[in-house]
Image 1 (cartoon, rainbow, N blue to C red):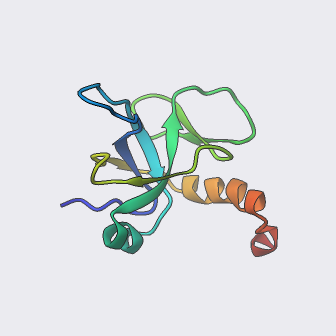
Image 2 (cartoon, rainbow, N blue to C red; image 1 turned 135 degrees about the vertical axis):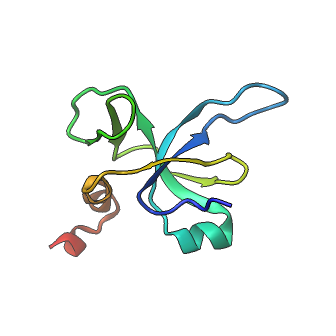
Image 3 (cartoon, rainbow, N blue to C red; image 1 turned 180 degrees about the horizontal axis):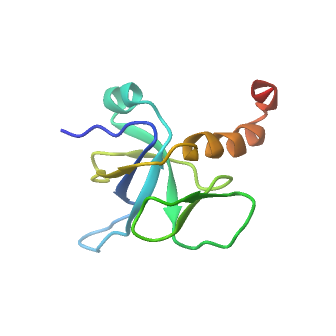
Length: 115
């Protein structure tokens, strides 16, 4: 069974499904470590969007089928990767994960960790 890893981009169901409604599958960048993901059944992730607007909070993702970004200041999710049917798409190219962290850490008061 595939277990999501930090830096993976997985397709996951982001919709809150009731009954037999179809969910909204989209890519997500996995932030949490594989050990946490395996033990808890959860992942900490951020959605990857095709809405590229050029904002300074966007981190480009260039190794998917279309131009995408992680908007690194909003929408951090903790989700059950098994229930959300995580499917591996790709490993984020070099630098994406660190660029996302560099935008998130100041939001939660960790600037001193970046020095």
